Amino acid sequence: MTPGEDFYSQLSSLFQQAAHNPDTLPAIPVNSWPAESKERRLLQDIQGALAAIKSRGQNITSREQTTLLEISQTLASALELQPGLILDQLRVIIEYTHAVLYKIVDSDLIAQAFRGPQQLENAMPFHIRLENSETLAALFNGQRSSRIADVQSSDQPARFLRSLLGDQSAFLLKGIHSWMWVPLTIKDRTIGAIVVTHEKPNFFTPHHADLALIVANQAAITMVNADLYQHAQTLATLQERQRLAQNLHDAVNQSLFSAGLIAEVLPRLWERDPDEGRQSLEDLRRLTRGAQADLRLLLAELRPSTLTDAELGDLLRLLGVALAGRENLPVNVTIVGEGKLPADVQVALYRLCQEGLNNITKHASASRVDLELQYENGVVELHIRDDGRGFDIKQPYPGHYGLSMMRERADAVGAVLSITSQPGHGTEIVIRWAESPEQKAG
Image (cartoon, rainbow, N blue to C red; front, side):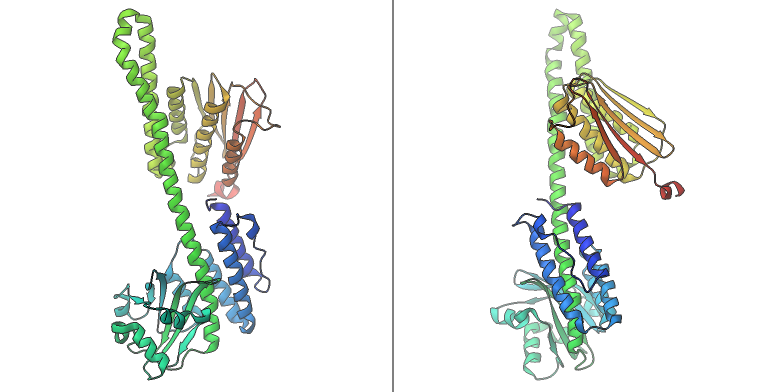
């Protein structure tokens, strides 16, 4: 199952519950996702992380709890990874001289963000090589934070750190004494770390470590969520490209192929029967107009701003011309009134019309289609009618999944979708959207 808006709505709700009720763990709907899905694994990880945050919160002052909740809300609201934001939020609750957020990539810790002296920031990105299992064990043992009172001392932990940093040691530790390592973990998996330093020796306390771990747990959730969101965006982009390629093949290529066949035989046909030749010429005109409309729509979808900058009525006319060209099906388009719609509403109505016409093509066996768009006093209605076979809306019927998806799309922008149909008497879909009082006032 591909992560979508429902999954991210669940995440948002969980973080809000945790923020407003820190003493009670929210109910996490783990079982609503397939057993091996990324969504289920992430929700299980979040469940463990929230439990860890709650257990560490027992010794934290009310002021610190308030600050941590604000940090949690800020990080939870970011779907895209912003490593610098994590370090900025950490500074709200822990004073530091500089801080680095690292992400584990293969066998390296790669710096993703830095806060501190400008000369170090200019050296980004720097990395730490994790060469052997001993290094990993020393850094990640127990997934606990580690503190070094003075990195300039001859103590074994300080020597280990300087050895780990190698040639970068003098540069990264210049003017630094206190050092704290905070792992970024999700359940039993470590995905990176936050390193904070201070110019004073022995500055970081166990209490600092507890606070940092709470922020780190939230940061780890945010990072995994951002990776999943990026994966979903990439997958959605790939699926959209595949859909456009399929449309190009199904619509434009087939129309042009048919037009080419007609053009090939038209001269001989005209010589033999001028009336039939004129009919074929009309078919050729219809096919080329339809292919042209399909191409314009595909180009519009490649540039999403076109779908919002154009008049919705013009887009519906293009959909009608394209369908008529492909299917030799008369499509009558009527526009009553005019108005400017919010971008998301316009795109939704366009998609709903597109999906409605696809359903007619696949299931209706219609001989006529009517599209009507009405604007009146902040209310918009889109009517999609056909004179096809119709169906009993109380029974399962062909295309009912498509209509269910249309209803969900309408709900997402606050529109209401209704369906009227009877066997043998065609179908009408009506989508109604009304401006809110705030939109009218604006």
